[in-house]
Image (cartoon, rainbow, N blue to C red; front, side, top):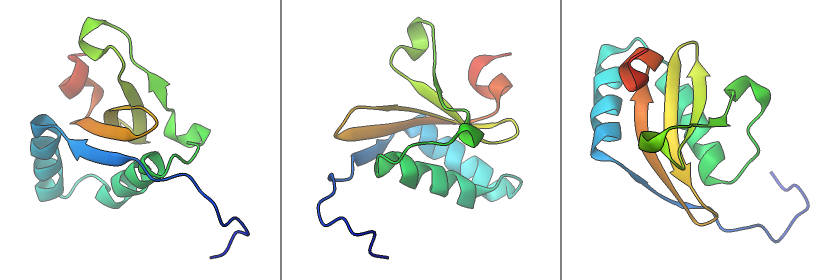
Length: 102
């Protein structure tokens, strides 16, 4: 797994909001969403890897979501997070209607 680079940037520290923890437990228990794909996305974000177009990552607008981003895990299954160079916080997990009321 040696890509030739010996120096890499430090991974981001991460945390989860209480709402994210509840969302995770609910989706994981239901067994209807691909939680492995959610983990794949989260690891890419933590490691500061570029997200390809399949993730449909974009900034959210509105006062409630200032500074937050949304990425599509699959279909209408979304991850909302905030991050800077050193830290990422996973905010919510769910469908558009669950998260945004639309």
